Image (tube, rainbow, N blue to C red):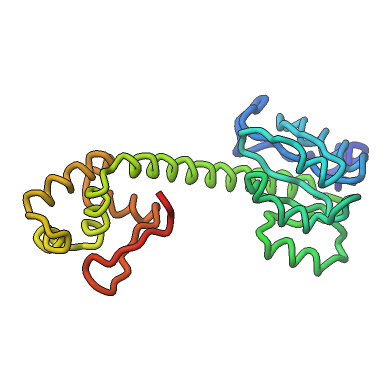
Length: 241
């Protein structure tokens, strides 16, 4: 199943070792292996276990979808042909499982499925026999992508929590500040004095923990708070907060 399998590894190049992920036994990432072939599952699991990776096996798409999962960085290594649904269909349902990055194992001749999987965001489409170096590289890349997505999600949740502490008036002031209006202009839009505007502005920046207006602009960009650009004071938010 693997290129350079155990019988010939000593005569060829050795299996690769982990280069980027923590060693020895890692408890921070998990590989979900979804494949109908027990032999494939066993050999892939043994290979990844030898590299200190945690692997959880599933023989069908439904089995994986019924699994509650873990709150760890993860990726899914899946076969193209599962006993209940196709691997491509399962890929389309990954968002309901936290959207872990997918790595496919399939047939070299299935060009159409390869293209569909990659267009849908798969990390790689590995063909049999599997190159162990390519598998390791794909898994490491998948972990990095998932960790990055998790960091972004955590950062966004923190910003949304800060935003929720703002009073209605402070929330009115926020997009005016990042929209580039001067204090006098923003005060005029809201029908308040410039001094009152400055007080609300100060409170908003303190609650958002922004060190500068530029810092606040970056935060609101991540939150999706933008100016419509039609006229001063015409603002919208992409998220309900």
